[in-house]
Length: 401
Image 1 (cartoon, rainbow, N blue to C red):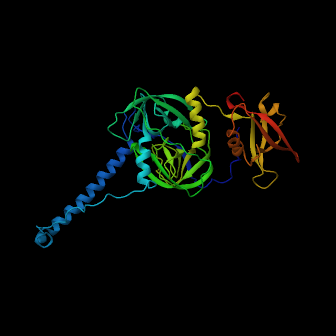
Image 2: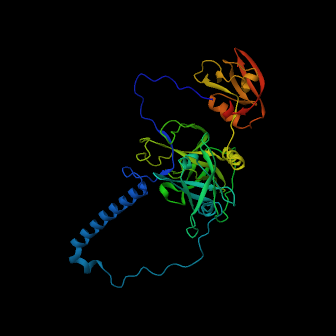
Image 3: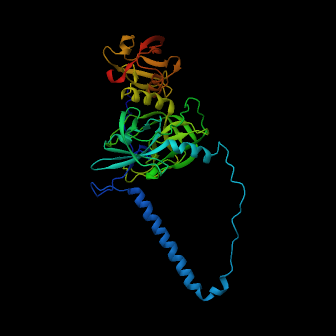
């Protein structure tokens, strides 16, 4: 199902934030085939410059004060011995305690091909090597290397189990590796705006990075570009957070105050260019895929290598948002012999509810359908003219609709 865009405005639109799905690219512009950590390298250079300036300033100060050294130095100076005592007590709900538990279950995912490379993150699902990450992290193909926060553990190779571009999720599996520590998956159905969250991943290749924030909003629809520069399927029902996430956090964990994974970090809004080399860092607007959806897709990928998506075989557009007429998803075309047509729905009907869950837009229609499985029968409420009607629809796979 799609929701056609509106007509272009007469005047140029004001600057807008845009959301990017990202893995952290290792490719250095201008050096085809040469791989390195571009952004990390720039951070390093900046650090060196800052250190050099600081050293220069200190050197000048010492030089100007050398003649007064006897007045500022104390040859017998001591700052005392370290204070001994009981270790700091950190409750099990502290960020430090949660990070210590979850870090073992979040890995760095490096993907290298003959011409490019990139780094993302992953969440361990099972001890026998299954890891959940983003589709866009592994979509480019190449050799996949998994690194652990525990640097004493060697890097291992992994292979793709299955990918799902529709939800930007993928599962990989460690090949001949050690037994892994699986993360605890929570639920995203009972989240509330303001709940504290912790993001864990490998931003800019910095494995084991922990940041904190809150859930800023729920049920966001996020438009993201594809890896080729076009449009990718939007992230639906996304969790918005102000926990700092950056390129390389893709596929990492967003966890709650109990250390349970409630989302998979996937996109970030920026004010800069859509180019991965020029995009800015975190501005406090990041997005994660709800774990309830991620769990369902991951199970399908592990079982069969592909995921199905419930559909009723129509194209629709949102109506009534401007207060003109009933709110819902108006059918603008349908598939011959598709689920909707078989159930008696027609072009022009306005779908207003799925299994008694109100539907006010196309996005809400898709989200409501995803709560069910292909082959399941669900009751749709719709308007035909001013008449309110219901019908039972057998959901079909989107790929066949």
